[in-house]
Picture 1 (spheres, rainbow, N blue to C red):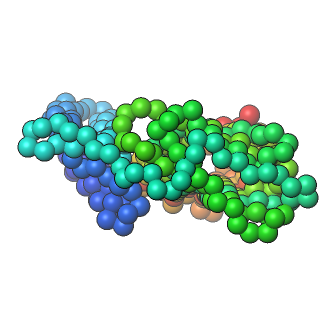
Picture 2: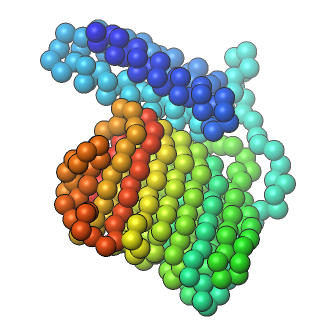
Picture 3: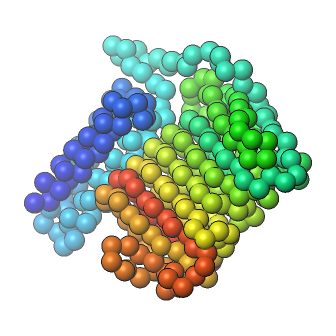
Length: 302
């Protein structure tokens, strides 16, 4: 029985990876997994050790999921290829987007709403507030990263598209700092690969934020909701997600996730969802939707 659980985890892992790779959702480097083949021996050894132990299924599930997360991270971030035993690296195409290390958009008085779509590869992204004259500012001190900002829509209801380009695939840390003006009501879409994303939105008004990610590490912090329904939608695979919301904020949690570990302080189950005690009576509330597989989810009430 325990052997079937371990095998099932590996089949689910490679099935999800292959499916996402085939549909160009992720660019998975299967060659990069070759040096880590001894992990399969470790998985088999763990199965032999814990197969007759108390709580063996749980222990084996944790071990195998951790191994899958590690391999998933390596496959989506590694730039190494192997050619008949010769260790080589490869580079991405030349920068044809006309990127720059700093991009910004001016803030126009009277701007009440703003939309941003941010497309980013393997990077560490941080979000905080910005200067009063700037609607958005993105910058990086890393010469390996280029940024391009496109501005569309009405001047007082701007739609922004921010793109990042990694000029050379390597193992260095690609850091991007993103600053948003505090006044507008923001609609955010973040599309990223194996990235680390730290978003402090305690000084921003968020109507909707959607995050589509691969093996990512997410830490999001919010203030009390500013509209009737603030939507937080996270679609990830093999990711670690931490969401911080005020203890008095009304919130509902909807999950469609496989093998998700979860800690929900201050929530109770109602029908098929988890919600806070004050959700039904609150005028302003958060709706959190989590979709994915093998995720670790933690919600803190501060």
